[in-house]
Length: 203
Image 1 (cartoon, helix red, strand yellow):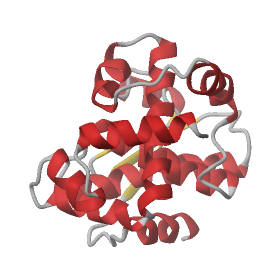
Image 2: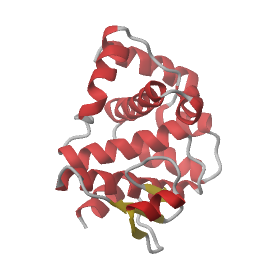
Image 3: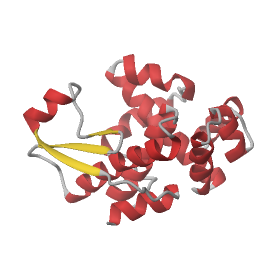
């Protein structure tokens, strides 16, 4: 219930269908989901492998919040959400559930964040997130996840969490990403990218 209300309140959406959480024996899960993952969301079904070594109750709460966010976005946008926003929102909810704050990221992201975004200021265009996540090296995938998360934090800082609802609702109505961004922020993706990079320089 705690995870349900956190995510649905933040994204301003209450599902009118049942969201199933299915637990698999680990070996059965990896027959279905070939890539390594701690869990997966497919449509309105969340799949979790029952494996030993989950670090803590907070870790499990974060995992469930992450995957539940994907199901809510799927329903709210009719599966029309850009990958950076989808993964960024999922991490924002994950860190809120696991750490008590969306500003405290995963510990295993810290060194990559410090190196790429703080010290070298080697930023990523959000339009490139799909190619990095789907065909990049492990470091590129990590960087794409961090960039997505930070972009959502930037949205929240400048426009408030209400911008999440505006963005997702506009996408669900069939508007383009640029149209949805203008509705939520007054800026298209190119202008938001510039604003995002300036925000990163001042973190």
